[in-house]
Amino acid sequence: MTVLTPIVETAHYLPAGGEDLLAVVTEPTSPARGAGVVIVSGGRYGNTGGRNGVARRLAHALASAGFHSVRLDYHGVGDSTGSLDEFVLHEPFVDDLGAGVTVLHQHGVERIGALGDCFGARTALAACAADGGIATLLLVSLPWRDLARRDRKAHLVSSELTVADYARRGLRLGTLGKLRHADQRRGLARLVAAKGRELSRRVTDRVGRVQVEPWVSRRVMDQLETVNSAGIPTLVIYGRGPAEDYTHNFERIREMPALRWLSAPGGSVQARVLDQPIAGFRNVVSQDEVVRLAAEWFGDTLPADPEERSWTSRGVTRR
Image (cartoon, rainbow, N blue to C red; front, side, top):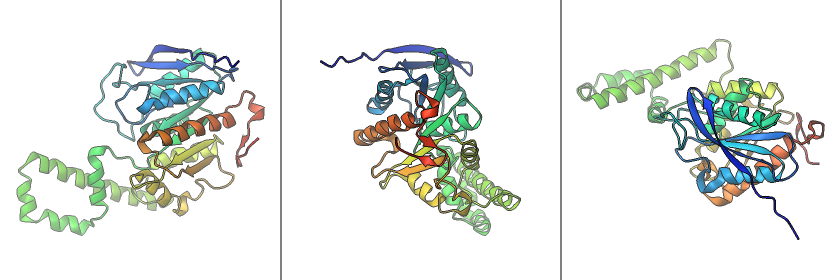
């Protein structure tokens, strides 16, 4: 007769950046490895369970493999305190993730990994690159652009216009007439700012830095190079499908000469594209695949005995 070990979960309020975050700690249901995982969500206003309970299922799968885990509501989200107007990719919530690391340490966990989706992937990567005590990463649908939602359209339009195009459009009577309206002025200001950022990036790239396309986030590039150089095992996963914009960006990125180290044999950062959509965890099948991969990845990179780790800096191997 099989005896099922009950799932033990405890709720905590964690201090972070002057706010109190609701966090749920899940304890192992098999012999504890002394390792744990912080699960951070994408830029959504849901609760700690995630869409279709995917974060909860991740925690339970990790528990059955001997891992502690913590999932939390960002400040201004769910049952945490604070306010939040918008998730901005280049402003990740590193303090929030750090609170999750602290509570795992308080549960006797020494080795910690992080799993993040979209905005959560940016948060996990930023925390790890800043020496946040994270030993391994699993990044789902990592975005390579830095733009807030309100600026994305302006960036896409500006990248297709030359400076001469700007001058011609700006001198049109129709354009000048529209500037009487506040919304039109704000839209034009965002467009001009986007072109300014693009030109600034081009100048910077010519002065002592490798050349990449202007839309590629320098933050992400530098952070991934940091964790790669530090030998921190990192798996980046994307999905396939017409709405998988992050995958399309990634496939363009790894063709750039400056980024050919990404997913190269022998590197610490590996990437995988799954044959189904995973951005936003839109269906249960893709969620189940990520849950399975997470248990496998952290089992390889956060074993009970660090000397038995099956992952090496030359790639993922199987026992």
